[in-house]
Figure (cartoon, rainbow, N blue to C red):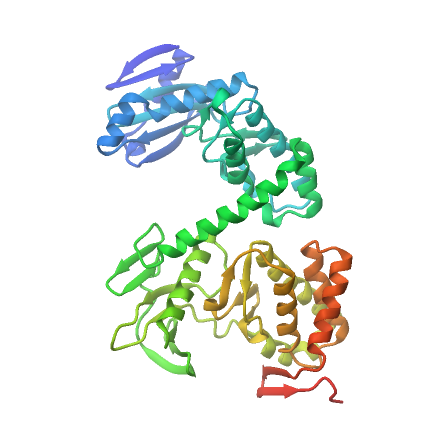
Length: 474
């Protein structure tokens, strides 16, 4: 290693020519907690990451074990294990933080490709091999998500190594599970049964699957509850000002110009303002539940409910409410949509609509997001997708067969009777097929749904108002 002093900074390189690459690093690249840039070097480029340290703890960390040096040393160790990572070229130390220098790799984060069903089998094989290497060499990454694995061609690169530990004999089954949970938690619920079997076969430990699945369920539940628990506090996504808590970027989205009252019943009053909808809750408990669900979904980055702007907590003198985006003019509830369009949609458009709705619901079910009141009036149809309404009725947990039965029954009894049996059956098969439910369970579930709904009244909100129909009408 070559040691060079420059502008009060100490640099340690494997090639002294690298000094020219870091000479022109500007102060503007060192202002933030963590800053990235690339600089030209030879025929390629060098990636430079700066870790800015603040406060007494940061000062001590930078003096005892600077993160730039730590990432460099871990990178060298991974190289010796043949674990692919951008080649570490050096590191730098300064009074305010530390640097790490790595060879620039023109690669993309793995999450960019995991949604591609054609590529995913190959990616899962590569990911299983990477995780197997970490297990064999007793490496705990400590932040192993899909953004910290890059892909270039057929090669996967492990990055962001400053939290990584080479644990040797201290490496435990809990460490192995931590690596697996971190990376698989991002997409495991979206994997098909065949993909799961293939992954654990490549990983070489099929028996660990049941343990991992239990851990993922517990981990996700804990994460959701943690986000919901801070729904009324200032966080990275929320800002509390008095009785109001605003979602990031939404503070200017709520001018208080009342236009009309849309709904008024014993539970809620819904008002339209000039740039938002305001849902006022008579019961403060339901308000808090709805807002916590909104916040959890915001953190999940899922556009599956109306975008929330802010919540105002209730007081002794007035009820609390949630201000959210107004969907007027962009679509309508599923029951009204079908009443208006079903007869003129045609076979091709109808089948495509069924596929899209099945995609939406099966995606949410795989992610453990359920709606306890799945009537058609609580599904809003947009040109580019769907949204759940009545967010207070959303729950976060793995679905059961009973949940599926209730969902299909509620939908079956809240759309116009003239929706053909063949289209209802196609929807059922699309959803259950995407969930990977085996044929015998699917047949039993279908019979249960038919039996439970065939004698019940159909009630829905049509184009001309509330409608009540019977299966026996001609």
